[in-house]
Length: 254
Image (cartoon, rainbow, N blue to C red):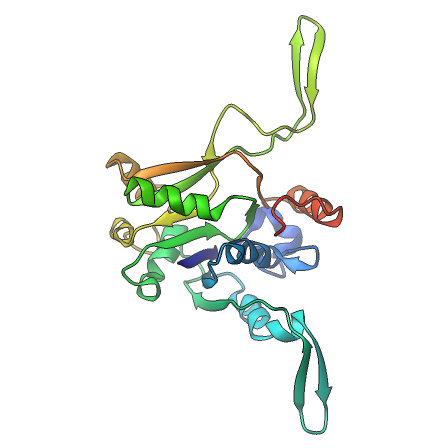
């Protein structure tokens, strides 16, 4: 199944990095978070990617144009200008890069991908969040209910430690647990092509008009993911992800 990845936003809350590169190119373990997301999908056999570009699109284009050189060992013959790949990345992905406008909103970027996706179901996610979600189980759930849209509902990590008390006595303490009180939009959608009709134009925000309409007509279903999920909104988020990867404890690693 085709996978659309939204990668065009300005990433202003991560300005320490995004003044020079787009947010999906911020690295974890030396590789862009976009690479980590793609690898998760590819693990389940979904390797046909459509990346919706915007802010600093040229940097993402250059990365994939030079993908083999950046991710492989090779020999260069400076006289003949021939390049011999010694050890390839072994990623058999197909990546389509499309400029969806500098100021387009999330819904507008999805709408611009319609001609590429065609009249078939597709997957969609944001280019700034990693998870150990079971894509195969997600797809099975989507096929089971027959509705237009499946959204992955996740529980984010709390920012602070959680204390449970009886009077003044602490009976349990958990440092930054996953919140158990609410579910939020974690991306990792599966969408039927009819959804495009709910998107008006470049100014449409995916999370408002189209998804609200889908919910109102009973066409939005939630796949509950109780496992790991984390978006990279701030430098703190990025540093936490880097620490997990460096310590070989990254839950999303496949």
